[in-house]
Image (cartoon, rainbow, N blue to C red; front, top):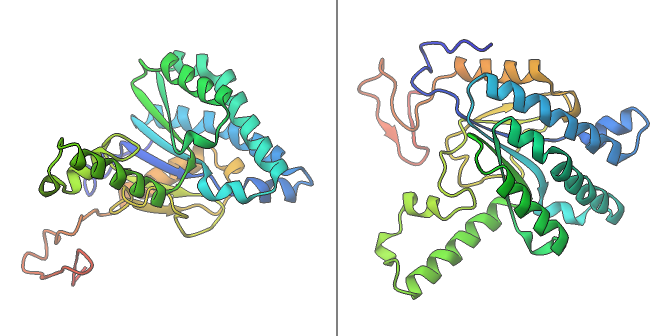
Length: 259
């Protein structure tokens, strides 16, 4: 298991976000259908959850379906929605028994009434869990920020919030994830090096890790490597290091100019 180094022990790894990428390419290499790749990807979720819990992680956020994914072929979208429903039905009891609280974040307006009820039932059934799993489905970071701005504007109109009270802390509490601590580490699989409209507000100071393997191949060992890399890094959050007490800050970047 990962052994935190003194360098980053003051920032223990508690929240991991993952962009699960490469299911289609994994399937294509094996002569399989795209949905077979997504099915293999679902199986991988079980492994990373178990590994994260053993490492004392308490929150995991998985990017399962983006707002832009609706533009994919209709057959693939239907298959993904069916797979999502099956996951909720099949895993609800296991998640509850394993102490995992499931929360689905995203725009539910495009979902069928049946799927909406299934989501709510699963969230209720797993509500007592201590480990929180966020599934981002029909989610986009820009949508999240815009929705939050709408909520706060409504609060101001209703007289419940003063515009002068709106700061980063208050804004964060109105985001989809209810003001939970930002991810410490964001992992993206399949070798791509971008965040693709994922948690744009929350990832401001998150450590980024890009894995070359496709998501269906991202196993417990791969997660261990990512966590080990996290503990090798030095997190500054815009501050200077102890050995550079007189370094000036570059306010445009939020980093020491000597970093």
